[in-house]
Image 1 (cartoon, rainbow, N blue to C red):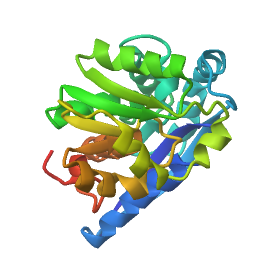
Image 2: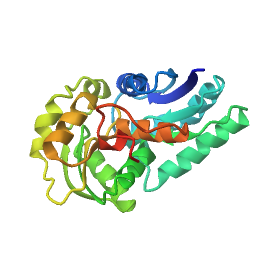
Image 3: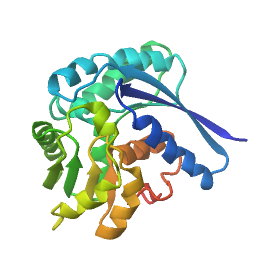
Length: 251
């Protein structure tokens, strides 16, 4: 008998990547687990430009989205905007996850809540990493907020590259192949892992395994971390082919 899972995605209105990379990873598990199937259901929060004002305003829509998705009785919900959480100060992912959890319970459709911000921290910690180097598409002030958020969780950021793309649609159009060259510019001396995309909108999945093989350190992203946490919440294997060490099934 097949196991069918409904995955709810809470995404910015201009996000075009989470609804491609998350399904791609979970569908690829069918190479390993033929009895599994996943469907994906999205609710959107209005946001076009990646700046603190729009991000904070957008976050207020997250409860509405959680309630709408709980109408579909999803098995897990993922709040898929890392920087919207991180720009609100250290530890906000815990506040957000609890708030959305309460919203689904009150609507009679309780479901585990995953935030990409919390998932990235958990993914880094699962790898046993304490020091990382990161690539973001953000303007430098937002990258600094992400760094402060990670460091408040006990994760030291050795080096960062900011691609400085403010328009969220343009972030989604970035070529993930270019991340291979960007990663070569990163200082990874002493790093335990590399975060190839500290943003769920910047495409990175096609480059994850290539960069990991070249750098010989674990490579993860906000998206691979989100899938890792989704699989943990569903209580199934955390193995996805060619998606980096975090999704090797060992953690």
